[in-house]
Image 1: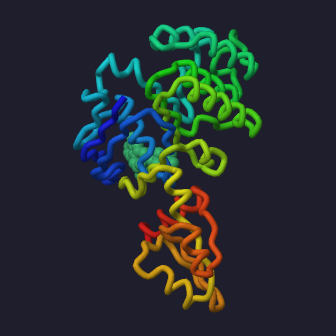
Image 2 (image 1 turned 120 degrees about the vertical axis):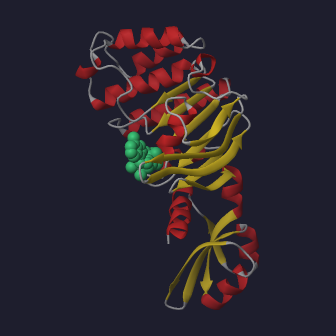
Image 3 (image 1 turned 90 degrees about the horizontal axis):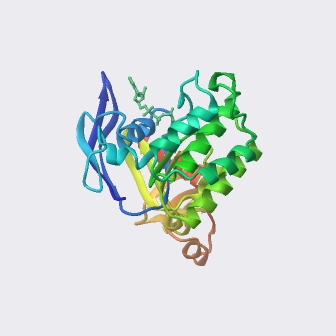
Amino acid sequence: MKIEVKDVSKKYKDTNALDNISFTLNEPKIYGLLGRNGAGKTTFMEILSGQILASKGQILIDGEPPFDNQRLTEAICLIKEGNNFKRDLKVKNVLRIYSYFYPTWDQELADELIAEYNLNLNAKVKALSKGMVSALGIIVGLASKAPITIFDEPYIGLDAAARKKFYEILLEEYESEKRTIIFSTHLIDEVSLMFEEVLILQDGKLVLKEEAEELRNNTCAVSGTVQDVEEFVKGKEVIQSKNLAGMMTAYVYGSIEQAKSAGLSAEGIPIQELMIYLTEKKGA
Ligand SMILES: Nc1ncnc2c1ncn2[C@@H]1O[C@H](COP(=O)(O)OP(=O)(O)OP(=O)(O)O)[C@@H](O)[C@H]1O
């Protein structure tokens, strides 16, 4: 489904949670939505999923706004960090409700995941551990098979092995049937290899939207003497630079090969670091 974000702002009293952002997501991909605390990620995901309205501008999904739009809400599944489910419901009833709600629901996958995460179907949500509540969210998100599936830090309380399993199943599912997956997380290093496109928000503004492959190939950390590095970065966009004892490291848009052929040492920048440098620069 095509997602068009047109001049969207969201204001809460004095806070501009989103400040005039515009972009288009044209195709099913795994998108990483990144940014520091309070950058506006959750606000964006809530507007996209039709849960709240923008103060200005609009989001269109295949040309229609998602708010109060059943055709679209059946096509979007947002799993948040917590509070996804009524606490007094039994797990089996939560799953039943979602299976009725999503026309694309995959019960076989849900059953497989229930077994994988050892979820007690007769337990009430309020009796589950934090990790188990997250597992329930993950099951709903994956089994919904919603054409737009959004995960907002979905794994609080889940241990590393359970998270790894989640990533594996997510990728398997995605490979067998492409859908738009928007993934917001602070554990960027763990998941960044899954991302096909990365969006970074800062203070409600979009500071980067780029194919992950492009980022990997066209950004690098270049190190050498201050003079050599300064010479190399002339005319290039510098994301961040650091000087120490006559040596300099610059994080730039440019290929590793280009830097190496200029006699400098160069390496790729992990997406997590890139996010930090980009948001430092803009915040400075
Ligand atoms: N319901 C609300 N009422 C008032 N302010 C809000 C509300 N929701 C969000 N905000 C504010 O809007 C800004 C963006 O919040 P948002 O939750 O969208 O950020 P985020 O990027 O998801 O942050 P985090 O990574 O910490 O979850 C923050 O300053 C936040 O305090």
